[in-house]
Each structure stands twice: as C-alpha cells, then as structure tokens.
Length: 316
Image (tube, rainbow, N blue to C red; front, side, top):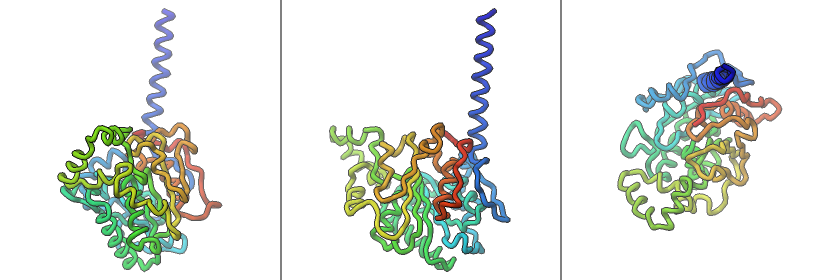
C-alpha cells in the first residue's frame, strides 16, 4: 500500500510538471513584459499556426507589408525581416512580425532565393539572395521615405545580410541588424562536415546540393569558400549596429558559438533565462527572444525591459 501511495504521489507530481511545461509551450510569448501596444492589434501566431502559414508562402504574416503604415519619431526605421533556409516569409514570421507591428513598428517581409519551390525559399546562391535583399530594402525606403531600415533575420536570414552590408552598399542603409541564431561562421552539423571533409565525402555532397539548386546549403558550411570570403576582412563594418541573439541548444548552427560576431552585441538566451531550452527553429517563436529584439531595436537601454523567463518556448 505504501509503495502504491508513493507511486501515485510521484505520478501526480510528474503530471503537474508536464502540465506546466505544456502551458509554457502553448502560451509562449503571451506574458512578455514591457510591450507597448499600438491601437491596431494583429493576431500573433505560434509554431503550430506556422504549419498552416507554410501553404500561403506569398501572403505576408499579420502586421507586415501594410501599405499605409506610417513611421513615427519613436520608430523612425522600417523593419525588414529576412527568413531562414527552407522557410518563407509567412511561416517564419507569423509570430514575430505581428509582435513588432503591435509594438508600433512598420514591418516588411519578402521571399528570396526560391530556386525550386514557392513554399521553400532561401535555398539559392547567397550573393544572389543578397541582391534580392538590396532590392527589397530600396523598395521599402522609397515607399516609407525612411533614411535607413532595421534588419531582423533568422538563421541564413541572420547571416546573408552581412553580404549585402559589406559588398552591396548596405552599410549606409542599415541602422540595426539583428540575427537570430544566424549561421554567421557556418555550421559543422555536429561535426559531420569536418568528418566528411576528412573522408572526402562532401565533394560529392556539395555537387549534389548545387545540382538540386540548393547552393545555400553548401555555402553555409564551416570554411566554405563563401564563408571564408564573407569574413576575410573582419566580422563587422562601421555603420550598422550589429546584434546576435543565440541559444546554446542550437542544433543547426553547430557549434552555437559560430553564430557570434566580433564587434557585435552578442546575447546568449540562457544567460538571461537558464531554463529556456529553445532550439534553432524556436528562436522565431520565443517570447524571450521577442523582448530582446524589441530592446535592441529601441536603442534606448534606459527603456528596456528584462525578458520574462515565463515566456519561453517552443523548445526545439
């Protein structure tokens, strides 16, 4: 009887823990501190609604690409959001775009590098994608009358703008550049890249990536010719404010420290919230990340808010 009682108590405790975790995951981002809501509130999605947004790749997420959006003295720069490899403008930003729009920002999203599918983008040659970003920035500047833009990118979208800034004249047009788990210094994919190089296997793999119109994959490998050229002269250039927000549980950019840039404000989520187990994909849906983005865009540290560690998730 005593053993049964102990088991029952432990099961109850386990159920309570699981319930708490589920609440955190399904309410991720709902309790961020310090939000300044605008009069028009756009519906904020999550990792689950992103699955349906995938099938509307050319539809901007709520709050993005609003034709009559007006810049203000508080938010003088439009925010251009740059999605990750294999994602599109809708599914990648269904959470963060309306968050920023509801906070009073003019937000713009677009698709780039779609080499073989309208649903799966950011797979093409990265310098070519950077030119697409340049075109988007020029369009947004002309539409809004702004002098500069802020950039917020995820994964490849947090790395590719470096090419635009360095080689395509973007340094004078970007105020703040925020990368979420960016593939800045490439990925080893948990050492498989280094192993493949040692065995001579990646020669064939890189050729396959290019044959399948997926050159961006090979270009994001550690020590690829593209990566070597991109940072040969240093990680940053004068002008933009650089910010990197990363998680130590990143399973795509490995090691996770490859995301960081010398000369940038480098933020590790777990230094703020040790029990935020967010992974690479979840960075675009995490409440702690959202508050960090807002803090860095405001450029006024005295008005920043400490992220709420109760707004974490999803944890992948």
